[in-house]
Image (cartoon, rainbow, N blue to C red):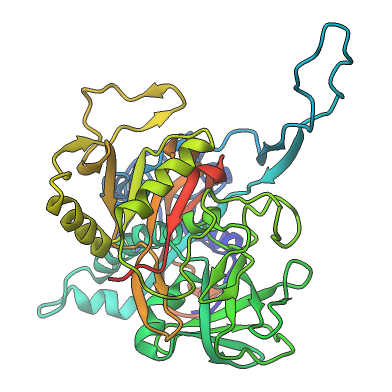
Length: 471
């Protein structure tokens, strides 16, 4: 089987192996499948009128829908964010300056205020493709059905891959944005001081992401917008990120940070702020940096909070820290509607509030768009504990912080105005399968799940994060 293949090539092979006609309409028996025609012809072929004409011969009405339903019924952050159709747009505008001196008192015969205009900045958003592939050899599929085998090996792999696809999408949404390095080279960077710590943090980055590096001595940014570093490999066992040559060795104590994501934008990306410091070293996350340049003092800060990190020193979650987030979001014109954190902080916060007899109620999380809400009597699928009336969602995929001593700290803590969060869906999860032996140059059956969407943060200044927390 080939090691690398574009999505277009895969879909083309699926079409050839289907034995179908133009636009994916099956004109004859589905001769390309080991299971025969009946096992996989569930639902209407794409050419027959379903919503994904792009993928031509994807018979997704059963398998793709199963994964999509699983995503929307898990108690994870993905489920709590409203889903919208992509629509005819590639972005929106944010007002970052309402004009200087345009409003003022005027005396009876005084001059009118100076006319000024608002400043609007365009935010561009394009769909991201998430793909999970799997396959088995023809011989393995035949032997697995015999006595002593695992049964239908392809179906077992299909089920496992569907769970992996769900995990991948939610994990991308909950990824971290910036971390200290413990060393590296001109083509690698190591997150954490060992494979144990690095394993849990390196997966916040993905192949195809572009990153920047900040030096500890001069606080200067290397390989920023003009010449981004592109990640080519991730090695979880050693906590190593591999990229194209940097021209200088990555040293211990320097930061690496996200410039652009190959996958879904993370919540943490929208919380990056002016002067953000990770372990005492600057980080210049570029997603939702609306200045078009490196964030400096006085420029538009995307995230609501001004100090999400504590310079790499762990701290306990406290009520003043959380209440500061409530105040900041409200000052910016929003209202916190959801708190998301990891299982560790959920327990810490629970114990903190129970000791003060404040953790007294549960509520149904209601999805809203502006002033519109789901009907109060309609269950949202799960009940959540609350603080000050705001539901608290524990998500095991929540990113963790790293201390200056290369020790993994606790999960981050997010306060979100979900009215301005949405997952724009270009194509819900689709399932594609093919058996093109000649193209693969091997006797293998292959399958793939694909989802195309992007997280839209319509008001980054209403998203608040607290990092560098103890476990």
